[in-house]
Length: 107
Image (tube, rainbow, N blue to C red; front, side):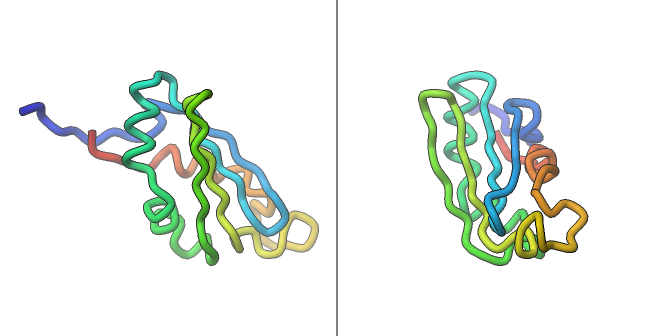
């Protein structure tokens, strides 16, 4: 049986994020096809919602983009009203991909 280990997502993918009104848009793009299979299994909408507890106050939607080995998450009710009205330091959600890349998963 293969030994399990814990890694940070940044070891197998990169990310991008931004705003869509009051929702944050966070993309994870795997470096390799086999890494896409790992993130598809391990990084669910529920896991992302729990990871951003206290930041994301609405539901999280996950979209699979297998042709580019990517997952896209929409975190609703996250940006305090959006870039033009929010008092948050990151009103456009630009740091959320970096934060998600620090998440640890078991492989």
